[in-house]
Length: 343
Image 1 (cartoon, helix red, strand yellow):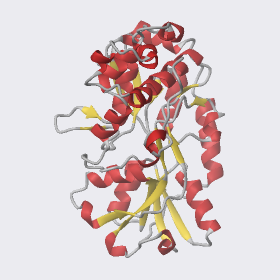
Image 2 (cartoon, one colour):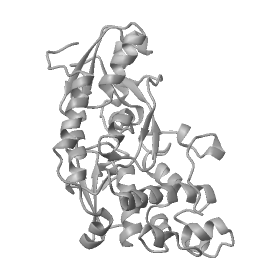
Image 3 (cartoon, helix red, strand yellow):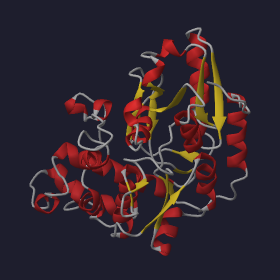
């Protein structure tokens, strides 16, 4: 199916993004000092993606995005509840960092060169993903080549527009891209059968399918058409804050590598393993050098667990998303996720 809609090009997307950054305002003096003075970490999170940031039945927002925000608050303010979650779409999220509307985006945005050199900094990858396509089972599409002449829904200003253009041109496939103001609108259009397919990160598609009452009518094609390294984002020119965000996430990965988790972190304070001692602040002054307490990593792990705990709780096989670790497994387990050594 098709519909009439304004079509944006990749060039317009990049120019639009550059304009957002240019108009965002004057950079803040020091975000770490601001966070300590305000007593709260303001986190930009995705609007509504189960497993990443969505309200549960009690109206409480939870997910991967939220847990990372809690970990940062625990590391900096010693209290994981001192957070302000601000659901944001792509344009407001990127514009909000330099102005102080948010301190960090734990949102699901891809680390790209154009974003990195345009005022945004990605401290560390938290999720290795890839873009794919959702289709209806009735469409009989089983592989991307079956989408020749398809109408594809996506959000304006995302990397998906360029990915579709590159992939379909390279494989000599025809398509029509239809853009919407937000990922939510694009998804609703696809579910409403205004498009033949929807493109997004495969984990994001799984999250959206999980909350559909008729989810069995849809499927995500197995093929991945891009590499999408996802990570938290901070404003450029904030090396202290960037380091805090980087090493808080890093601490969760390091904890999993060392067998430290939410359940045993108190016991692990007595460990004789030098790596565990450094991570938990028993020895060394690594927290002080970051501008936080010596037990910053202990506080973060105590709040949300290690990286594996966060994965299993929010997106793992026992959740509605049922995601296997894949590339996000530790290097020791065949994946690519690894920690920067704390030493």
